[in-house]
Length: 191
Picture 1: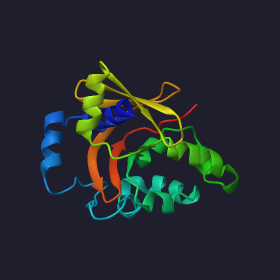
Picture 2: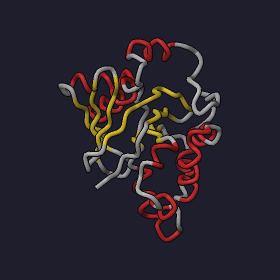
Picture 3: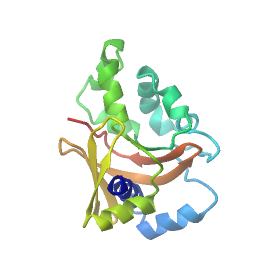
Picture 4: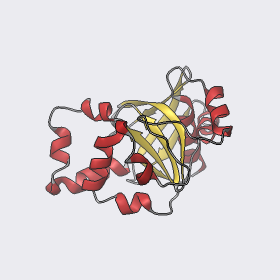
């Protein structure tokens, strides 16, 4: 469990393109949250309440609704969500999202979405600590039961899925009343 937490923390805290880990850590000490998708994110609101306001997460919100996960992600948690932006879904093969949103594919969609969620609240500092403790890698166990591996590339936290797909954390430590969101640039997929 500690290695999972550490991996999550590392993953969330490092992968921000030009944002450095130290800058992210300073942002964590501020009383305000980062903006996401042009919208303010409020620590007093839950994951779903904040996500619906992000222009960058309309596909994710539609998928969460189609999978029937709104109630779960609105519950007490805590949860750490690696939230893919709309352009992440656009990287999938043509027609994939539309197919997954069909009622008959709810099980597959749910497995993919819960692969982006880790039980517990793992801030960037926790993920970074886990990566350091794991000699450069941290393994996270997702709610779907699969594994994500967090590592650093320069100052960016990289998530590697079970199929070898990679995603970069672009915004970390978006605090929620029931956990934390880390924005990622690609969809990660379970086996």
